[in-house]
Amino acid sequence: MKTIYLDHVATNPLHPEVLEAMLPYFRELYGNPLSIYEPGLKAREAIEKARESTAALINAKPKEIIFTASGAEANNFALKGIAYANQNKGKHIIVSKIEHHSVLNTARFLEKSGFAVTYLPVDKYGLINPEDVEKALTKETILISIIHASPEIGAIEPIVEISRIAKQKGLILHTDAVASVGNIPVDVQALGVDLLSFTAHQFYGPKGAAALYVREGGRIVPLIYGGIQEGGRRAGTENVPAIVGMGKAAELAKRDLQKRMDRVKVLRDKLITNALKTEKVLLTGPPEKRLPGHASFVVEYIEGEAMLLLLAAKGIYSASGSACSSKALKASPVLISIGIPAHLAQGSVVFTLGEETTEEDINYFNETFPQIISRLRGISPYAKGWEGMEGSSCTVQK
Amino acid sequence: MSAAEVVTKLQSDKQLMFLDQPLAADATTDIIYMMCPMHLLTIEDQIKDLDGGQILSILTDYDGALEDIPDWCKKTGNEFMGIFEDEDHYKFFIRKRKPSG
Image 1 (cartoon, rainbow over the protein chains, first blue to last red):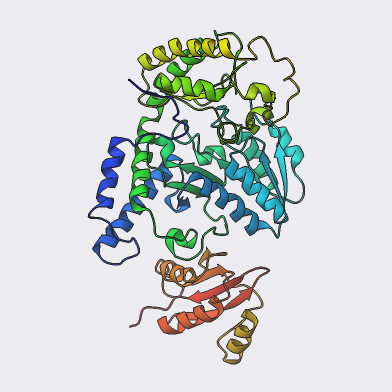
Image 2 (image 1 turned 90 degrees about the vertical axis):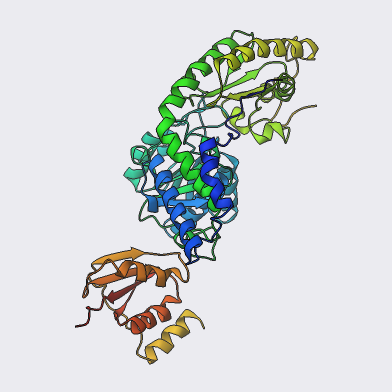
């Protein structure tokens, strides 16, 4: 059976050129980059080359890139590192309600350590109103961290407008750009951010390599102490093959970005137009200001998980949103934040397209998806309506 | 040994020179929150770019630097000019030695 991968926001396959670039560093070029003999020097050289192309992808300087092992690590590092480095100036942080858990839970951890956190609301499309950022400022505010693009609803946030406010008040601005780098142009100068997290596997690089951009001159308390790697800011022997892969993937993403965006956007629009023809299917997130390969819906009267299973049985791989909804049987906080009631949030599905997605794939999907909805609604106890469910809370009622 | 004890010892050894005012530096490197051995590696790295006689300033909050930086200067023949104690960090000043001959 042919399989169609529509979960590119979860991860991506390695680009063949990326794999080729990585292989020598698993084999003969295995040296520790700190060693002063030939294999070590070669590994060091490869890391610095990767740093250059990784920086170029976001229009940063190579010395502004700190490699980490994941986007979650980069987000933890940004929030904790900036909070602790600036706590003498104030102890208030602003984040949004639709941040990834690596930001939200770090913010909660900082609350337990004596910081105050404001969780900003979003509108029905998941977009932040920059005026709300301004209103949330206090004389204690030191850091604003707002996600660049939501992996769950595709919304692209107004970071440029928020950065104007941050600059005016002399505050530090971090953005979690894990879902956006490699999918849309991301330029740290144009965005005006001081820190930015991104990860290689979102743009056909390997898992295990990510980075935190820290604007030159910015002070940050390390998350991991113990060595001189990454200028003493992130200790630990480098994952050389993965970093090399990130560098190669960044080079390819910079070269092919426009082509990738143009292609997936046409297919994505075709998918959305078709899905919305089915009754009681709602697009989540903004119709325009969204990631080009991203389509997300809530389908009334049925569960996201059931749709995923039947789609998988037809060879289509997709997701139901956040780990909250798919693993913890809780309504997604992102969907709740945009005003989707808990009973509707259970019917969440997310389809994300990538480089290998073809028109034929989308045609097959467009035929299959309505059939699956119809089949599930045929057996759903709620198919005749949501009687008694409208007031339900975040946790699923059984 | 605590930072205060190190300061007392080094002052009695006349190794530590605290300044009332920071000096004008030709280059400044901020390594606040970085730990050993970043202070020494950074000096080695940064001083290469200076001409003999120029002054490098290092900003650090690492207490070990109180002992290590004057020592490093003694070993390498660079002139340790003193420390300015700022609110939450130290500013070290080093004059690069002029090439001999």
